[in-house]
Length: 141
View 1 (cartoon, rainbow, N blue to C red):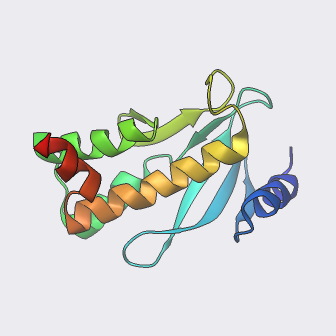
View 2: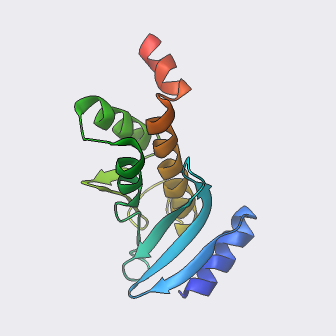
């Protein structure tokens, strides 16, 4: 799949602006989702066709560190992991990612790209503005 083919599939499915650029062995996707400073969330598709991984290559946590002074303490890590868990995004060290092919529910690449970018934006907003409402409600139960 080429960057242009992927862009066409994303725009067709979501009717939103996605820019896709071939970047070596990966495709860089500039998504319509934003961080709190207004910069757009970028994710990458890597791996052979049919076995792709969608990843942020650590960009989300790098953004959080730059703008919040994030130091990985237990409370911050718990909050980040909670957001990832509810959206079934995997946190692998500094990276957020989702495997496309073995996942039983989210098998299509467009869905994985959209979910990962949305979660990256959610995590950044959550780290700037505090716990999102669902977490507060869950804690009350």
